[in-house]
Image 1 (cartoon, rainbow, N blue to C red):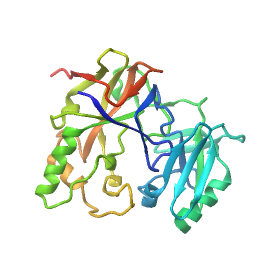
Image 2 (tube, rainbow, N blue to C red):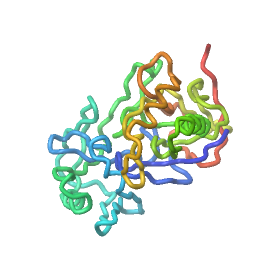
Image 3 (cartoon, rainbow, N blue to C red):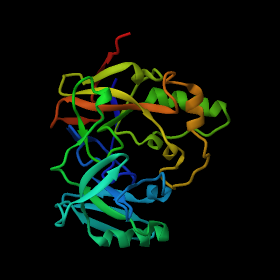
Length: 282
């Protein structure tokens, strides 16, 4: 098996950046989910509430995070940490410390997306703060992440997407691309749902090892076209995933595996890396 795609999402719920390589860190790929948007109550805002966020492009230069949208000129946000007082912001039930970015970003968001973006501001994860991953699936270990939903890495496979798309077509639906699931690491696999039977993925020369911790329960973001923000079939692919019943003991639709890093912090992960999977005990 090998890695076919790597994607980082510097700003939670905005467009991702496809990369050929990245640095593995315990909290995720380098720059992944370092920023997020919050409302006036400092609660996280995603495409669940505002699908139009999918239309904002993100880029990284040596010195800036760059946001782009067809309606406005690009906006550059310095990578250097901003000055200001820490805020307490929320991601699901977690409270995290964050630094607010300039109000220029808030004005830019309204210019790009209109009144639906009123009240939004951009915050950056305060790296001196540690956000722990839920302990229930860590086998006694510990892990932490930034502004991801809950885990530092999301892994999907080409075999599972092929199986899902075959099922969608059989139902008269349109196939969907992998970006609907916003993974960090896509692994080439001819077997559908193979990832659900893996405990670890190791780079062939043992440079790094990832532990697959928990099936990823999917939400309505999977129905949003990640280029246009349109929702062509509101019930899909969630309805088909539920009917496929890939996780018989769990409720809801699942696709991919949440993961943590066991070994290799600081190593470089690359598209084309060969991987070996260790199966779960039966």
